[in-house]
Image (cartoon, rainbow, N blue to C red; front, top):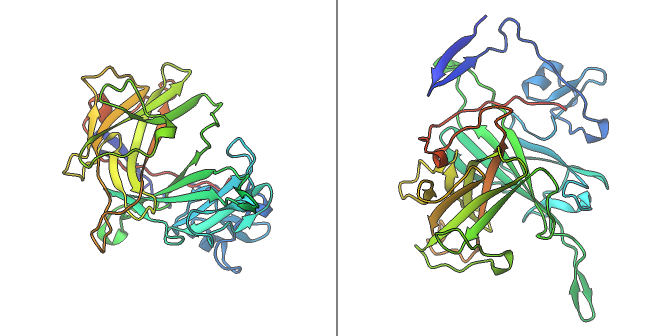
Length: 356
């Protein structure tokens, strides 16, 4: 049947060719007609449509993009509903941050649909580690300002949505005898809500800045931004607020970036310090502090980004962001990371696309 089973860093890797026996292609078409973003030309065939990683409606002969996906042709395609942030948001007021021209391709009072390539809207490839490239895009509300006689006001909530797409850096080619892996990426969407809005779900994750190495006192939001001398330590803690004691907080990556998002520094990757950084940017706190799987602590040395052309300091605030996952052992064994004393190993994950 053309299957192969090998071992890679202790993991079993199963490779199945699309043309292998017992392999069937299932296409779901549950995306409503008013939310479909056309893919390809009007005369595209079903085979051509599926080859582009898109969905095909046999009844109407319409080829359209899957929703909430990082597509095979390197596009962000996602929908934002008016209640995604638990407060009322006008979808027609959304745009890609810093790019007023990068607006939804479809929008109404109920939802907004974005579709743009990873090279459009100045979406930077902030992180390249091993065989993974992660593109980040920030969607935010347009703040409408009213000039009154005695001042300026706004009634719009400052909502932000971080959207990331992950792709394999280099796909194997049949010309060199390697298997052809799925080239489509996968998407993660994380809303940034106003400070007074609290999550009502089972889990909540906080990123805090500690006042010192004891991690007993933390800076409140009103004290930020902080002013720190270069080279001085900055203590960060990721904290899981969970009603389930068995839940484990898994850290996929943490990055630091300036407001312009033209540069980025990878602090953690796969729960470990950046393996490509020889300067030991991040120091994990594991053995010498009380720690459970609801919290992950690490230290960095204060730094400043520099302009690539002038080599002068960028006069911009620096932001921290982490991508995390909550794992319950009842579903599957929780992956151990360097926070748990495990040595870092690069892994390649292949996610399947969906059309619904």
